[in-house]
Image 1 (cartoon, rainbow, N blue to C red):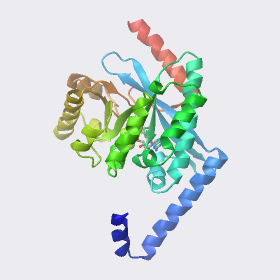
Image 2: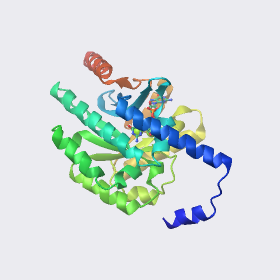
Image 3: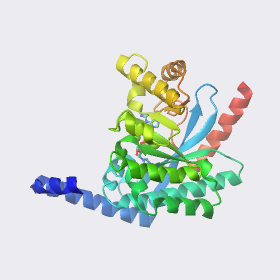
Image 4: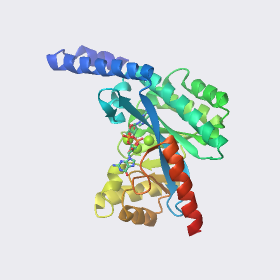
Length: 284
Ligand code: C2E
Ligand code: MG
Ligand code: MG
Ligand code: MG
């Protein structure tokens, strides 16, 4: 709050500032209306073990279908929503939708670990972890099927409070991963304090593999860091065989990306999953 006060002292209103603020407010009003209207849905993208090609989990990604503007990407509204209490409304929708889906899949005999994206701000809201626990019991889903992905960049403040919340989740067997690793500001000291089980290497470092020396070194270092910490590593944005082969050589545990499957609606995802499993059995 003190840092905020200081910022406000030197805050100068210009026409540009007020335009940015009104754009932000208009967008937030639209998100709010969109939630009421039922514009939002979830897509799912598989996470694979690189050595075997087996699917072990899936990440839930929000999608917004606006009646006039069509599809709006999460990068266009999540960062803005993170600066308001609206992120909680979004997360409430996401948690219910995803836990309900997890339960429905389990009734069909499909048991996968399902990852949900949340921000550091969400975690620090009073009642957030309770909401999660309530939904798990409402839909009769065990906590060990749920994983929380926290973007590295949203972890800057109140790290001790974040750790306390994550320990509460850990008691319910919910696991935690660090998303977009390498692009945030969290120091390695923070990383060591957090009860995490997976490092997700940001796709910017994967995109230029294997030719870009800088990117390869960062991927290699992240894989070794995860190994030393006794946790797993996952590469985001695996798009080519060349990416895959290089990541396998590095000893990266898992991968996600268009090479395997893009994010799909729940039913489409299950179709893909079943045919992938058949294929796996043929290979084995
Ligand atoms: P993220 O969690 O790092 O998700 C990975 C993004 O990479 C997703 O974008 C996914 O569609 C995309 N992606 C997957 N494979 C590939 C690939 O091979 N190549 C490329 N170029 N991209 C790939 P998406 O769905 O647009 O989501 C963007 C970000 O928005 C997410 O990044 C996450 O930070 C945020 N987000 C998405 N859904 C939610 C949500 O339900 N809640 C919150 N709080 N944030 C969300
Ligand atoms: Mg994620
Ligand atoms: Mg990411
Ligand atoms: Mg991201």
